[in-house]
Structures are given as C-alpha cells and as structure tokens.
Length: 278
Image (cartoon, rainbow, N blue to C red; front, top):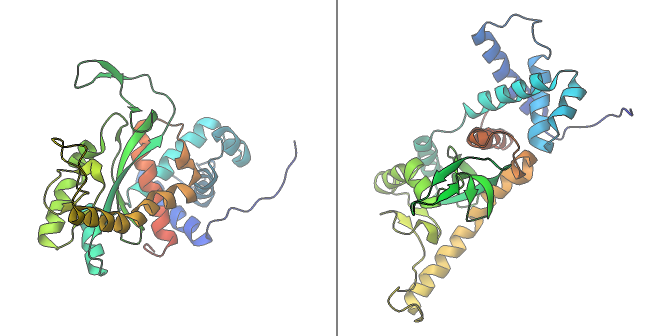
C-alpha cells in the first residue's frame, strides 16, 4: 500500500458551504456530537471528491476510514442537502428577466447509467426497457434544463426514464412555467426541433412540409432557422459545464431514480462556484 497526498481542486468556501448544510441537517435530526464517523467538513470533502472525480465508493470509504455502507449513506445525505437548495423554476425565470436576458434556452439530456432491468409497455404495446433511450441507444435518465443565452445553467428538472421523449418530459416539468414566462415576463424560450408544437412562447425550427418532404424551405424560414440555431448554440454549454466540472455525471452507477437529485446537486455546486449562492 502506497500513501500519497492529493489536492481537491474545489474552493474551500464550497466545502465550508456544504459542511454548513450538513451540520444543519445533523442538528435537525438531533444527532449528538461525536456520534458520526466523519465531521460535517470531512463528509463534505468526501462528497466533493465523488462529484468532482467520480472516485470509486470503496476507495472513498477506505480513504476516509469508514465502511462502504457508511460512504453510500453519507453521499446520499450530501446529495439530499444540496438538491434541496436547487433554484425554484419560476424564481429562476424571474431572475433571468431581472438580469436583463431577453430569452432562455431549453434543452434535454440523457444522463448515462448502468443497465436497469425494469420493463414497461410502449405506446405500441410492446415490452421495452423503461430506462433505455432510443435517443442515445443506451440506459439513462432524461433531464430537462434551462440556460441563460450565454449557456450558463439556471435550472434542471427531476429525472424521467430514458424511454420518455424530451417533449413529454418537458410537458410534465417545465412547459407550464415557460408559457407563463412568455406571457407574463415577455421571456420566450428557444428550443430544438424536438419541442415543436409545445405552444406559444417556445420557438423551434421550422420543419419541411410532410406533404412535400423533398421541397426546400423558403428563404424566410431558412433565415429564421439559421438565426434560431445560432442563438441556441451556446445553450449546449449548460450541460457541458455540469458534466465537465462534475465528472460523476458522465456515468452514474447509482439508482437511476437518484439522477435528478444528483444533477440538481451539481447545479447548486456550480452556482456556488460562480457566485450565485453564498
């Protein structure tokens, strides 16, 4: 066994913020001092190591001198206290408007996970894997997100199984608020073609006519699509920022039902690092 020193490349303020949330949770639960294997700060470091570097749980447990079962429980607590701080959807939209943005960008992503043996019936009546995504041809959970025009993520949804299409997930979690933002805040949403037909205030590319699939779009619609895609381009940065910074999001080996809370926790960490939280 070789020991060595390592540096966790996250701000100390972020670890202290998380430790404060964990300490508050322990007080709420009535946990007495000295009864836990790790202090709130030690638990915060464990959680940040997992989010930042996707370190194997058994290795994390060994490094911190705790059992694997305790490490899993501590990580669940870290995810729980962080996701509880996630932005409210309507507040995020109001904040975007107050910050002077003239639109937001909506998008969806399948977060990869291990195979789950859970079957459901498709709309055609055939048996399919609930968490299998035809979009990515793999197992995963569908997360909807909103970003600012510069691509900074401001809100993420709860998880839906990978078999659920973006438009269905959006209808369940975000469309109502987007219609409200368009009508009450004059804050429209730009989205890709997968969200076509989602209603007023949500702008999507114009598709070719089904009656004449071979005919090109007229110049006005081509120009509209070009402008829309150029404005939406930075929206891809939102998920890239989360996945690039918090490597555990690249492939999740926990229960897929936890994906939503894990992504929401990563969003809160990102907001704190960028001065959105104190």
